[in-house]
Amino acid sequence: MEQEKLRIEIGGTELPGLYDDLVSLEVELDDELAGMCRITLAVLQRDDGTWPYLDDERFQLWQRVAVTAGLGDDDEKLFSGFVTHVRPEFAGTPDQCQLELWAMDASVLMDRRVVLKDWPNRKDSDIAAEIFGTYGLSSQVTDTGIIHSGEVSTIIQRETDIRFLKRLARRNGYECYIRGNTAHFGPPGLSGRPQPVLNVQCGEETTVTHFTIEANALVPSSIAMSQIDHLTKEVLDTTVDRAAQKALGGKAATVYLPAGMRKEPTHLNQTITTGRSEMEALCQSLHDNGEWFVTGEGEVAANQYGTILMPRKTVTIKGIGENFSGVYYITRVTHVFEAGGYTQVFTVQRNALMPTGSETFSADGGGLLPGLPI
Image (cartoon, rainbow, N blue to C red; front, side, top):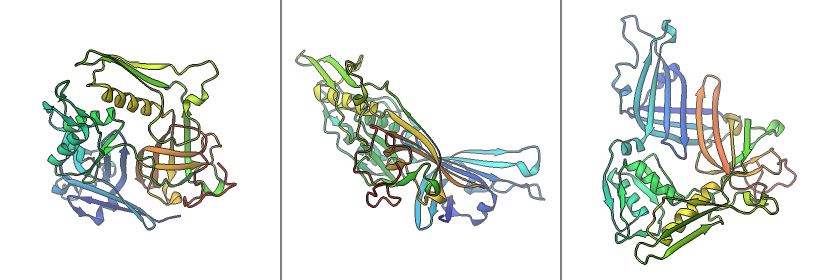
């Protein structure tokens, strides 16, 4: 087992005495939501009637919070953000009084003002880079390619900056999030090296204490769209029934359709684009998103796993049968520190079943070991 480590900084400073009063700490990292942190502290009234933390300026609204976790030699900055809620609770007995601090990552700064603005003749990626820059964030932005011509249609923003960018990201099949001081706008990272293997029901090697999984046959098998070209008045038709993103398994959902059952398309209605290129990009992003027909959730005993599990990366899971074992994409991880230890609650998704044959099921991810239980 690996030794657990935790570092909490509030107001730019680590307070060693804080850990003696720590009841619990949760950091939730989700692929669709802002990163969030909740710190619960025991507060015991002093003899002079004052309270620890409550009047300390470092524990006030909009103070900076940073959380770093470690297992053995593995350290990861889980969270960096701002206190958004301060919640003291004065219970019936003095020893039950607590203080909760809730914090959100830097995207909360981008969600405070509704903006009405036009963005003519721009790429979605150019818009993202410009908006991130106004907040002083470094950015990793993937080019979206399509310039939305002002002769046909102009992009109008009628929401906060982060909600606007998340809307643009969704129509390109991208993710939009902030980690630390870096903003990301790009496709999911499916091609990187998977995180160390999660073992389910593998005897003494088991690291996952609970896991459930679901395969859903009712996902759309193709996406179709029709509209009239604004300039030429030509009728444009687009159908997408092939994935553009990497398959994480050997058999996609459509492989399981019985003989005689067609790939029935889902038609987009009341949706306007600026032309065929944008139609195809929109249909492709919706098709790829609909391909995630396998979902699962579980809990990891962190000191047995020995790794800080992170979302928006892949991980290999074994011990759940040949059909379900393989590489998954992690969509959410909640890191929980309590008196009983450090646990990681996670959700995953997959766009195919069965292994491809290229997976590495060894514990360290270094080389395929035949004969291991999958």
